[in-house]
Image (cartoon, rainbow, N blue to C red):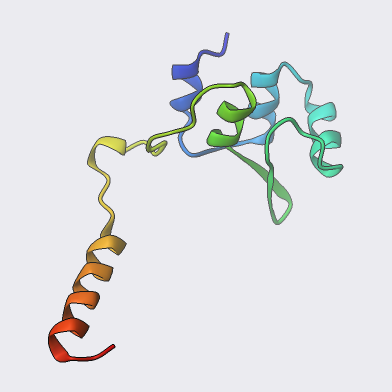
Length: 97
């Protein structure tokens, strides 16, 4: 049985067969639905593979998709925010726009 915790434990994305099992769909039907853009959650095609974002699965199930869905959610750091903050500060102190 798929619980919210078990779904979240999959990480940020999962493969199509796993997503299909969460929705109670068979493998063939899942691929047919993905090919015709009718899968119950958003599907990303990466080459010949399909990936399904966990946030989309949670949303389709009516569950909140907030928070960090990566495995290292407790220790993740937004390095891009630090870079942007430094760059803005540098431009402000140097008189550049």
